Length: 114
Figure 1: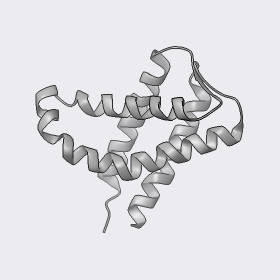
Figure 2: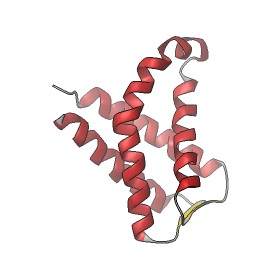
Figure 3: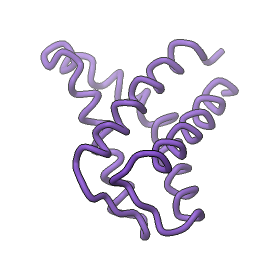
């Protein structure tokens, strides 16, 4: 449980940095950014490991690109549900999700639940 909480917190910090530094993703308020970070951090910490196990047969067929697509769709769902988020191009969220995927994969390998 402690490992999962640590992964959620680190994923949230990385997402907050990605939102602030990537051009093309705009957030109106700091509160909206923190709420978005919390929701995506929880989704990456809780839902993503469950989806990874469900996607295993399809990942072999798509050579792992299904995981990237799942993460991209998760960001778009957050952007559509939260007020104050705006995405001006497709490349900014794709670059952010690629960075988040690498970071989340690395965290999952480094920090294990006991």
